Amino acid sequence: MPAKRPLEGGGGGDSPSPARSPALKKRCRSFDLEIRGFRHLEEMVTNCVQRVEAAVESVIESAISRIPEVVTKAITCYLSRAPSLCKPLVDQNQPPRYKLRFLNGLSNEIFTKKGICTANGDPLKICLEENNQQENNSCRLLSAKIKIVVLDGDFNIDNKDCWTLEDFSRHIVRPRDKVGAVLTGELELSLKDGKADLRDATFIDNSKFMRSGKFRLGVMVVDELGERILEGVTEPFTVKDRRGEGSRKHVIPSLDDDVWRLQKISKDGVFHEALKGSGIFSVKDFLTSYYKDEHTLRKVLNKATKLVWTTIVDHAKKCVPGKELYSFIVEGHDVVLFFNCFYRIVGITSSDQYTPFKDLDKPMQVFLSY
Image 1 (cartoon, helix red, strand yellow):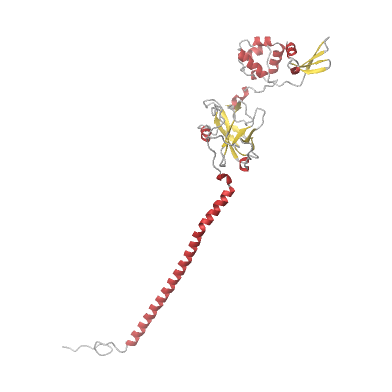
Image 2: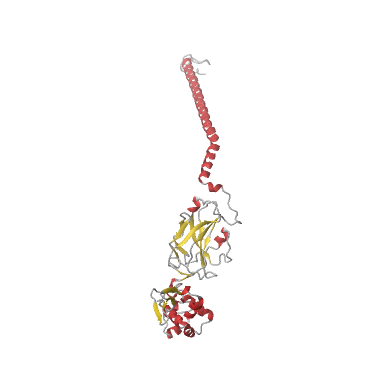
């Protein structure tokens, strides 16, 4: 057999080479240092994490301990700014201490697309009232925000002194499809010293679609005040399309108004034609004829019932006469009679002493009326 080739770097055998032992020891020492370094770094990281955890826990514990104090302080501050929220709500079954009220009213007849106002042209006035005059109104109530709404004319038909908010809200009129809002304008107002004026409000829709054919206006508080305030409500009224305004009856007729402006007299109707046939064209003509010869005028309107006749005459008498006066001297009696522009006696002068007709005794009034 051929001889085996000896290993490089020396002879055979199992013992390590003496030349490699120092290098191996150096490498082992290096590994040992690295391991010690890692252990030291691990200890540093662990200590750092523990310190951070301790700091975080301290901050959290401090914050948690302060929560009751902060919350209590915030709640106390809020309630001090809104003391009315601490008051118990008024029993809904009891009349509220406060109520809103319209101080003046609307005409019985209103037209669409025309500003809402009283018969005299004044704005609607609203005020806050209290049932117990001994109590002082809260400043928040006197400056509360209020809202104008349209109500069904049948609301509170029994004229009750009190109702619930739910009942009031249930009768608010909702807009009809394809028509839009029933009422437009500046409908949200703020009370000033418990008062407000409605100056900008216009009806867009008429009231004929309501069962009663009428609306009411209502006013309610918008703010949540912790106090029940009874809503204000007007008397019912009719809203008509403005196209019919040309033939409307005037609440207070004027002297120059056409006679058909009086109630129960339709334009170009039977009564109108009868009056025109007798030369009576205006309200002044009607009153002049009435005070000169009531019996003859009654014959002209002989088809009118007693109730209709009374309604026509009463409406005509609301007319305000002009300032012009006429006098008639009663010869031989030192008496002068004074008449207004449609010949109604307004007073007499006797022995240079003037006496208004209303101050005369009843027998004298009857005598002069005939």
